[in-house]
Image 1: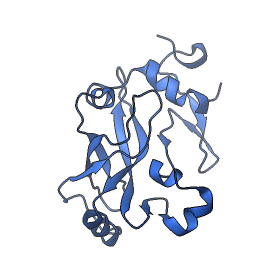
Image 2 (image 1 turned 135 degrees about the horizontal axis):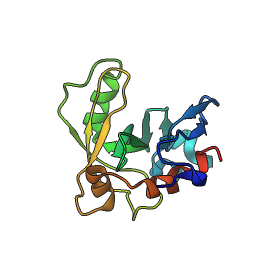
Image 3 (image 1 turned 180 degrees about the vertical axis):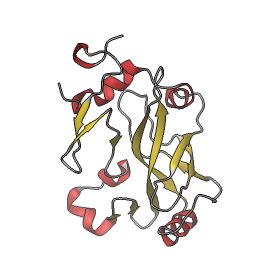
Length: 175
């Protein structure tokens, strides 16, 4: 089976990280810097309506989001690809999460949320029901798609094909 640029699958690929500006082996994860609703606020109004850090977002003091990872196993490999996405949370769960941010939250029960980004190559993903599972101190929460009739849920359960993964990460790989 062939991968990027005719290389055999299993041969490491390289990508340049936009965060640290260094080259890494393997496939990059792909993420969003904010939830869709924060992007939809006109730029001239964002400073007054959007609170945004690398992990937390509040829009209009009524919509609450946390940054998470949505893992997809890669079929035929031992690799996992992760989307860096945002999930909504209730005000109560958001405040609890923010207050406990520097603690180990791996023992928490999963929280209910909605996926808050549009993922390329999938039918609309905004509003998909997700389960948000907090992790150890310093690790982003993991999402499980609960809208079972969506292809994203199938890819999370059965794995994403290497072909579909390459469509997503191809622009980031060294050619």
